[in-house]
Structure formats: C-alpha cells, structure tokens
Image 1 (cartoon, rainbow, N blue to C red):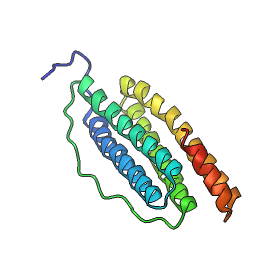
Image 2 (image 1 turned 135 degrees about the vertical axis):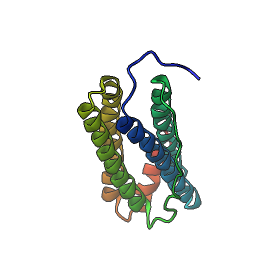
Image 3 (image 1 turned 30 degrees about the vertical axis):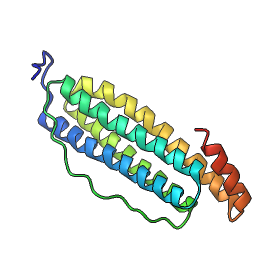
Length: 168
C-alpha cells in the first residue's frame, strides 16, 4: 500500500466521496439500461448516445476512486441498485436522464460544500472539475429533451434525431 505524504482527508469527505463513487457507477447503469431500451426499440443512435454517456459516468466514478487512492485513503465500494428498465418513449427516457443529471449535480454541490466546510483544498480543486462537468451534462440532456419535444409524434423527426445522435 502507498503511504501518502499529503495531509490526510477527513472522514466525512472520504465517506462522501465513497458514496459518490456508487452514484457515478449507478449513473453508468442507468444509461446502459436506457441504451438497452433504445436498442430494443430499434433506435441505435439513441442507444449509442446512452452507451457513450454510460462510459463517461464510469470514468467519473474512477476519478473519485483514483483521487481517494492518490490521497492515501481506502476505497470501500458499495452495492449498486438495479436501474429502471422500462421507458414509455424516447422523450420519457431523456426526461429521466435530465432529472438524474440534476440529482447528480445536487450531490456534487453538496460534496463541494462539505469540502469547503472541512477545508479540504485538494478536494475542492478536484470537485471544481465536476461542477463544470455537470453544467455540460445537464445542457447535453436538455438539448435532446427539447428536440424530442419539438419532434412530438413525428417519426421522421425521431429517425433524423436518431441518426444525428449516432454521430456523438
């Protein structure tokens, strides 16, 4: 095991980051479930978008994982709940994705607030990246939601958007 030369992390920040690892991996499961739903609906572009999103969430979880290890802290992985697996429509799936991103944003903000209260400066710097990232995550999901709302029940518009999302 590596011995860190840094100031030790407080227990509250360490535990909250461990919890966030679980939420990031759960997010990856949510998006993978959505990808499977889109594959079953023969919408490969939407599925591709969700698979890409799932990979990003795994990377986010690993950022927290590696940060804890870099600080000389233990990582205690937690159980991950099963994600939802049924969606009424593409719009429903993306609206749920957007709500999920808003929830994750709230968790990141709470974690940042905790790092500030605990005066954990390295955590604040690392979490700044996530604050910015969540702006992009919400923007990306919002754009698709808005376009799906514009498309309404027009299957041609849905297929055109599917083709566009395949290029992500």
